[in-house]
Length: 366
Image 1 (spheres, rainbow, N blue to C red):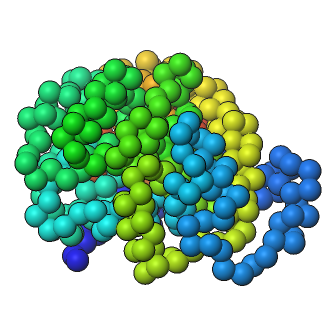
Image 2: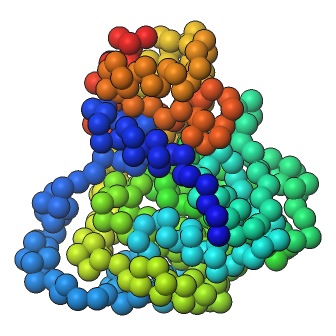
């Protein structure tokens, strides 16, 4: 399998740990180990006593039990734990796709959601989100893209990088279409629980579509990227079994301390995600005021969920702008070219406490 360089990750390798202000982070404000242990009496002592041997390959039973509580119909044995979301994406595609298969991918998107399939030898079509439609997807367009050999549809909602949240009626129609056609639906739900209005929260695909696979991770809504814990949840037992068998050739199992801390966080997941959602809500007025004062330079669609947006810049090449900005001020934005998007957009992240300070630096730079 041949994979092209991961543009976004190579970009972050260059800038992420040198820039003072990460105004493009796709995750939320993290916690220290001490902060996380403080959620529960006895947790610190429990961590000190935690066994550092191998963990169970599917994930610790107690961790899978906590993950299953996120869903309405999933049992612990229907959860497979991975080292982050990336491993889960990699294993799903290798378990279910063959050369010559056709897949449809919600785009723009995280590169691995299509690049791995291309490396396998699949034909990839993009189901494009467009600015003129406020990043909305068109189900009728999806139907036109379908082929006889379409094996999977890959969708991400709430969406990276636009913050778009699919309306429930369209989401249900998508799942119904996939079921009707016998097509696997891989649903990237890593920003679920960061809806600005809880009434907008969609059901997980795995709860309404028995053939679908839902992806989750500790990194995004919970802000615990350093744990490197992700998972898939599904009623589709053959898919889960094939992924579990392939995992024997990747990580085999995940980190015992990470599993302990992830389980602890999930026992308090409403508090953890609620904390991050409050940071987003506190930062949103700053963001809105900024874009209002610079309406001549930027267009943006206000997100409905998640910690990121995908504004458009006028008057200057986005790559040059982002490079000048980080060089002069230490403020890092992610150019849309890292998604192969041609529209002179950039990803902006607003779930860090120092975002107002970063916006002030950007404002002075302008």
